[in-house]
Image (cartoon, rainbow, N blue to C red):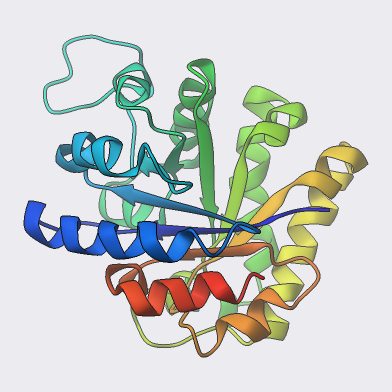
Length: 250
C-alpha cells in the first residue's frame, strides 16, 4: 500500500523570520498526521534552517534543483553531495519552470536525477504538458518522452527510489486545476508506462499531482486510485492551507 506524500515547493519565497513561523506551525500540525509523509523543498540558502528546525520532527526537507555533476568550475551551482550535507531527503528535478525558463531538456533532467540518486537523495521527477500540447492531444507523448529519458539513462529500477510528479504546466500558479478525472488519467498512463518495463516498480511508484492544489480540492484529487499526494506550490506557504492538504491524505 502506497503512503500518501505531500511536498511543499516554496519556489523563490521565504525569509528567515517567515520560515521560522511557517515551520513551527508545520511541525506542530505534522505531529497529528503520522499516516501521511510530509516534506518541504526550499531555496538553497534556507536548507540549514530547515535542518535545524525539522530534524526533531517527522517533516522531511529537500531542494528545488541540483547540478548534474559532482563538482567543478560551475559558479553558482549546487551539487547533490552538498544537498546531502544538509540532510536533504528529496530534490526536485525537471520542474516545468526549469524546463521552460532555463531550457533544461529531458536528457539534462535525467542526468540530474541520476546525480541525486548517487548520493542517496530521492529525486522528485516532474513531468507535464503545456496548454498548447494538451489542446493538440499530445499530452501522453510529452509525458512519455520526459519519463522515458530517465528510464533510458538509469533503468526502470531507479524509479523504485524516486517520486514522479505530474504537473500540467497550464495549471501551475494559474488558479486552473485539472479535474480529478483528467489528473487520474495521466497518473494512470504514467503507471502503465512504467509497468511496461516492470510491474512491481510501477505498483510501488508514488505519483504526485501538482497544479493549484488547495485544501478544498485535495480530497477529490487524492481519492483517485493513482494519485498518491501532491507537489504543492503557493498553498505550501500558508500553514493552515498546507496542513489541510496533508489531512486530505489520511
